[in-house]
Length: 490
Image 1 (tube, rainbow, N blue to C red):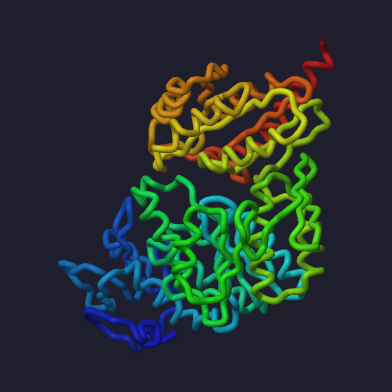
Image 2 (image 1 turned 135 degrees about the horizontal axis):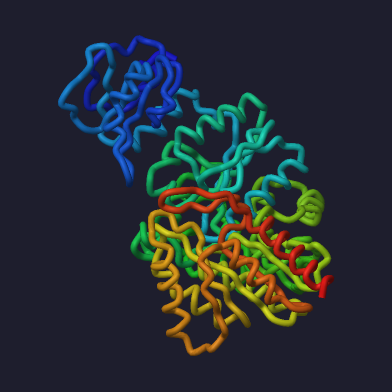
């Protein structure tokens, strides 16, 4: 596409060079630059894209977007100065990919917990309703034809538009996307309008970035100002921030709840290890997913379907036939006499939700394995330590993704919450995550429940100087096999 079209209708500080050239692609990583690409210099948290302009030019970039003055300019390169490269990125991407959202209806799901499961449920209902549906989220991206592993909840704007462009080629009609608070704060969805927007809940997380719950909530609320005229907001009416969210939009609002009055209120709830049952008006749902939190996720999906005027029978059939979501209350079953559950929960609220769900089932002791991620909200570490010893019968504290932080420091902050609590629940510190899972499984007796928190579907662990392969589910299987073998040989 001609560069002049890529920057069409954008507010620019200046242009140095030719805008009549053709741009083959747009990149924000200099290492991925190919011949005749446009390089966007983004000032990030750890580095500054302006440092890599020479590398981009070396890799044959023909144009560069900058948001600060340079000391030297190359006469063979076109420079486009903007006020903020990050804010410019979605505009550039929308122009370059010729706005795929002209042909695709976008559904956004935001909230602290439940985003991933809710997007899967919505996608399945839409598929069963006859609509080809794409997905952008924490676990994966589905472009209509193939699945791509995901590295973050909501990608950069350029990547989102690239995925949407692929979806358009594949005749996708709806795209369901998890929308994180970071994505909203960092302008990744600035140029996008949503047919439906869902608010699941708001509990403590990401305060390392947002500082306060009020600021965190204000970022989430931005999504509801981006709903199309014919669109719908779907809001959890049991959440403390529901009123704030509802004030953001003049669109149709569909509320859902278990406790408060709402448009979709779940009643006559039955919980078991096999699933949940609940009723809305005269319609009874019998789901394979379990836990009260999955009732909320299902209600959110039903709200989206109602807003799109989908058939009630299809909604019910879809929800009742959804299998488990990877790494979300995922059971590891090798016919052992105890239960093992792997879950992505990594916030205080999500941890409590899982533990409360388990307590509704017949069980003996609950054994918890968990850690906390580095470079993330430090305030939740002692809180999660206290929750673990309060709700479980035995705790194994380990590492999650320490990233650049010292694992021992993270563990000590978790341990502070344990020591400050009034509970004398036995706990161990086993820094090696694989050894920690083996230890928990080794402790398990008949009808006990081992819960491995924090990483869910992830198959890696990030340290300061390395990333290692580890899948909690596979580790749990090996631990179970070893325990069963040891029992047989006794």
